[in-house]
Image (cartoon, rainbow, N blue to C red; front, side, top):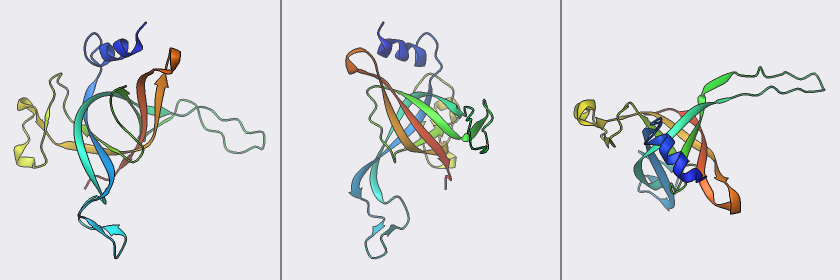
Length: 162
């Protein structure tokens, strides 16, 4: 079984459960917004970034029950928090902690064009604006026989979109 092929089929072909998101990948280079005097960004992100529209599958992170012999609070199994989501990506996607994922309100199979001005939005023409932002907290490469990466899981939390 080729898990890479199966994952691609899940996203695109047979199952078609994938959806489009914007992946914002940050570099280690400071952007023009970085102010060394105050050691903070002003007017935008601190680091230079690139954006890519990619297909993913996602689901909320579900809690598991935790039993503590000390009598501490026990989490109820099956409860999930909409602020934390797992995103599944193909093995070729370069994603790391600190990157951002933007949801798109778009449910078509064709790759959309991302716009940032409300006046340019036209869902029928595939022009959509990001609607929700998630910050990547952790990335796990999922490996199979021989250590080959089959797909990646990015754990992310919702942040304020300005």
